Image: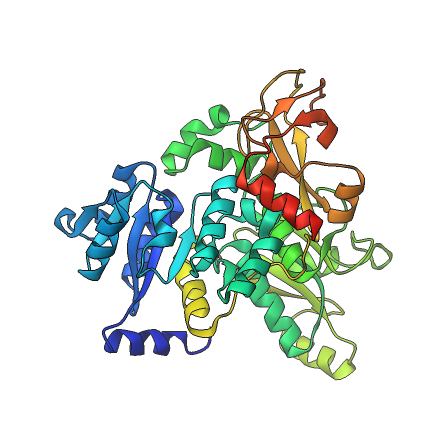
Length: 429
């Protein structure tokens, strides 16, 4: 992150820009376009949405006149428009990864299979890939990261989302010499496992969110996905299935996230978790083996020890994405990416209601399933299905009780999807 602002200013002064395509024009996509307009040396050149009106609005909200926006139906139209410094919108996703002048592709769809396809195509076309789509990343991030490295481009999650914000503190703590014991994020609202798009619709529309997106926050799936991304990028694991999720204040985090024999809740260290009462912040629990470091931490009002919390009280989601774009472009560095060839943690699938044989499923934030986190090896041993592989073409093969975890033999998955095929390749490595 150091010196990125000066590098961007230098690019701007030389009349050059990092040209970015953004797929998805919901709350996050629109905010990103507006924020990027304020960044010197960077340009949101192309916005893709299945609703053209949303893509156009992403620009007009950022102060762009409609006369400066081209609605494109062909790749040639996009390439010519970008050469003439026009802003472009389209509803054809593949153009985001194929446009000649695009340097970086950002996926802000939140749809697992769409994200897998976008990332795969971007890497194939030698474009850096920024994934706001954590839902896809926790299923096939390891193989996408491997493909990106082979292609000489960056695959990364975004700064500003909780996993990226946690990784920033984690890297700081390790680089400073602290021993990291636990990492985690705050959760805004109590978990309601029964939340559906219908039950949250009114609140979602007030926030200009898709109801299924808000439902995925409230039923806990989004939290589990973000924790899995943290695990996959650090090697830390959930201490128990689903995590603890205590309610606390920031200054109590070091005590809570200590071992049971020391008055805390943990069976072991090097874990990932979440906590109520500290949102929208993220945290890292650290300690040290040296008495003089303890003395200085206490002098600096960091607590009485032996554990201390490094806490960031905010995360700005897509408004921070320009940081990840710039890091990828200038330094060829990821903000956050899986560190192994396979996941460390898995987001497994739980029945949200009683399911009958022959019934179709849906997906994250909808009516039939929700997610919970566990260790990858445990999920594999128990034959549990990652929630990112579930879609509305998945069929229940036997009756499943509400709250039951879904195994591969319980459902007939849609094997035609890109995310399924990538996951199969990942498992075979």
